[in-house]
Image (cartoon, rainbow, N blue to C red; front, side):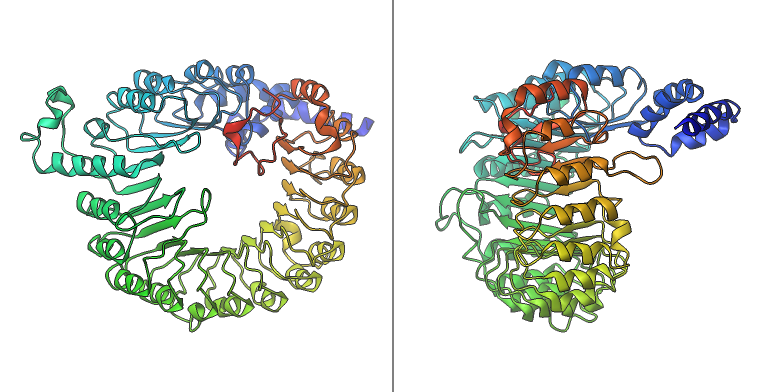
Length: 619
């Protein structure tokens, strides 16, 4: 210990003699968290860090959820920042307004469960040079306030190029956008809106087309000042989450935006769509006139009702593949009547395809992926969700896809050990999702000896994997023990403390760990994770940990969160554990550790789901 102190003191003295250019070069390589640690550790670096912060062009606080006090403390260090990204889970509107200014060109505010629509107006007044805006808000009781405040904001953002709004509504609420067309900046290229009404979107698109055809003869806008009237925007990227996707909507998009490059449509209907109010082959066929289209996503979500696109079949896919050969990214969800013939037509016709994603396609089988050699050797991402006819044979057919970086087979229950050997030769594979697959310990032994640089691995619900499998995975001598940063072993009855010991001792790069619904994990696992240390700086690497519904964890969980354990932890899912009732103790811990968010409501890691319904402890 004394030797360590001497080294620290000597290090401090030596730092003071470093040239300014070298100090600047060092600081430029550090993230915000590392910069703050450096400023605290060395007096010599403190003034340099403060000066460096004032010159940074961007501020990213997405990895933590600051409260108002922490945010104010950070912001006064950043005088000229142009890009701001903040997790607003604990922030009210008044706190966020303090961020705004004419210097801001990019603003990303996520999880705004406490933010109101009045923020729109404040952004319009304070950020005239804004080019990129992304907001996540919870819907208020009066949806018409959304449209009114949005229009007030758009009147002032004449340089806006990208607008992304996610409004989490209540029950069946959808938000009207029909009156915003005259105020959309002509510079706008990217528009993403969630959740809006189909008829409202259709009216917006029709007015967009009408304004482009003849401004002078359109009486609809007679009450709008002439200075605000301009030709329609040249939108190239459109993303909409709606109550329904229909032929009428798609044809309106094609007519209004013939130069569209990227189109993403998702509906979340509450009932079975009836004709003629549905998407059919006619709507799919109309997309063929969009010659510049490179990215297409059409998804019917089962979030509110178990329903599919029943009026699109192979003919629609054939027509699309013939006319849209330039597609580089394709996502289809809920295409229940399309067979292998239709899906393989896309794979073989689109020679520059980089991303291929299919969800809930009951007729998709291994036949789609036969003869893949040369057909899709450009593939970087392959995602096949909940397609029950897919087996290991489909994965073996991907052997020629040497550029593959993401392979997601979530919910494909017939994927087994036999295909895992071919994955070990993918030297770019960074993300692998085997959730629900029929893999065993033997399969993990194969992965553990491979050279694929897997950073994110999901094994959720793989019931045949035990502690032994985790040991074979991480102690197999392969690459994964060095590269693995995110691991999900949730809903696995074969996982106990022994597996967590292995993860704590061997997976030193892991910063995100999910072990929800692991019934045989005890306090001993948390102790092992609390003692887990980086080899270089001796700190705990874990930033996000999910122990939701681990019933054998005791109230001792509270003690593990006291300093100096888990110093880097930013998010903890602790719901349905014995310690969950100790909210007063947790509140004190969050007061001492202002960057820690505790979630009691079963959200996925980081509160990506459910953030609008609760306010986690720590704010």
